[in-house]
Amino acid sequence: MKRRKFLKKSLQTVPVLWTTPSILSSCKKEETSINKTVIVVGAGIAGLAAAQQLKSKGFTVTLLEAQEKVGGRLRSNRSLGIAFDEGASWIHGITKNPITDLAEKAGMQSFYTDDSSRKSYDVGGVLRKTTVYDQVEDEFYDMLDTLMKKGSATQSFQTVFNAQYPTQAKDRLWRFFLSTYLTFDTGDLNQLSSLLYNEGEEFKGIEKIATNGYDTIANYLARGLSVQLNQRVTKIDYTGTKVQVTHNGQTSTADYVILTVPLGVLKKGVIQFVPNLPSAKQNAIQKIGMSCVNKFLLTWQTAFWDDVQYLSYTPEATDKFNYFVNVKKFHPASNALMTFAYADYGRQTETMTDAQVTEAIMAHLKDMYGSAIPNPTNLLRTKWNSNENTYGAYSFTAVGTEMRHFEDLAASLDDKLFFAGEHTEVDYFSTVHGAYLSGLREAGNIIDLQ
Image (tube, rainbow, N blue to C red; front, side, top):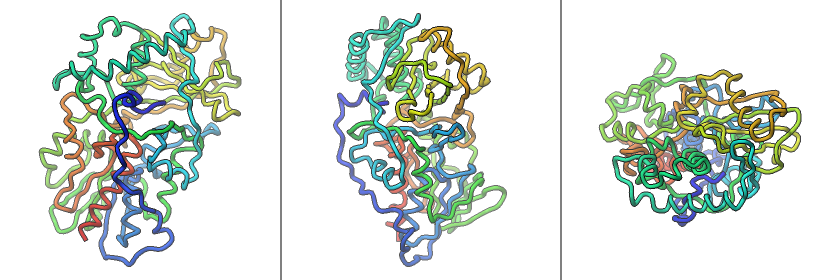
């Protein structure tokens, strides 16, 4: 799976300006205490990275996590004997990506998912010629290189694309690319900015998928940290000398607070700020988009599908179970496929029963492989949009978004309240490495105040 794959033609990787410190040094030897306290709200990768860095410099750090375990959107389900990553799955570009080294230290195993190992089916189970697929893929990238020249600040990608490419807008293979290569990596096309859809930098190198669980990184980073689980923060008061954080009906205080909750949580307004957040930050929260991507893992007694890494299907419906990852390629003992639902259809799946979801997925697989294929034995699924800990998958550049809005989200308040998370990283928003780097950034900002 290529994260922002379409950028490869138009962007060169910029030098990484961050240096990745040995943030677990505190597990071995902690520096002399500087008598300063920090509360980190959220024990996802941003919060964990910040906490480890601060602890290594002698700060007293406490993490408040709303869920029952650390990791945030690095969440792995092993109930079926293999790790189903409900959130992040891939390291997107392993060259100079800080997650690459971190994953190795954490013992996260990974597998190169070869994009060229694929087959594509049209409706009626018609196997598409590779030359046809490749030609449309190239045309799709060419379109992405130039469409922003026709865009405007008030028009969505979908509006501009439909006007400029009316024939392609009706083509099933084109709609597949729009869904799986664009909506998946960004957000709803009827909300996506027609000017900023290709913003953001990427790391070079191959893509690797975690095989033993992306949460191994979170568990590694959590070593030696003081983490309070099942703590839901409802109020942050930064009017006084110290910041007061209300969680589960009690109040904790600290010299500094780093807030790392997802953008979707900020949009919901479930945390009260005293005083209210500045208008620039409130505007950024409103203007930046929050996508919906849901993932589904199905297992069978025996495999009936092609022995390739990726299977695509081009139905009339949009964003609906059109891409399948062959999990058997990296878990040979399993007979499993992973598929996805995006945008409005992704949200719709959250109102569907397991039986309804399975039926919809099987309708596509039966069209590809025949009605005699067996039904799955198990289904695992996500509901990120209605999950009160996230209210969505990750941020994207919606109509009305300006790149400065990501920096507005990152801006600290009164040198006491700091903000981290993928939605605060202007260069690497919507990625795991962006979240990680944001945590190091805010830890560094607090350290620089001493």
